[in-house]
Image (cartoon, rainbow, N blue to C red; front, side, top):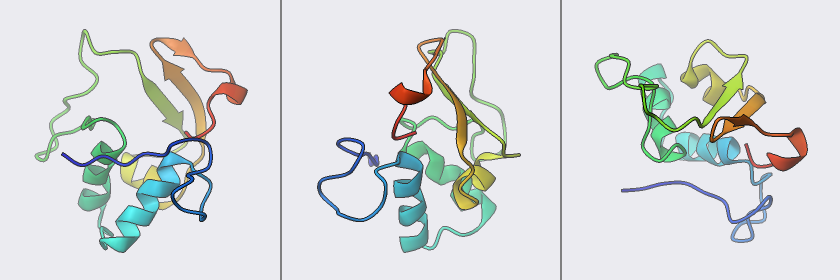
Length: 107
């Protein structure tokens, strides 16, 4: 399994970028030429521990009853738009609690 990550606010392994995990995902999508909506939506699992809202056939698989209460909210119509258009994360919910803006660097 492959995942993307950052070791802190700024990634000390690479001097470029903000350390924001979405920005790291965008660079991966550009590098591997995942430009279509399907590829972009599938790439989301690289930063979500393998979780995507829809399976490969478009069936909703997340969220489900009993899932952990971790999510981000952004002004995008789909995950592909959030990734490709760089939509800012507006709200982060971790373990069911809304994170204060100062505590959510990297999202």
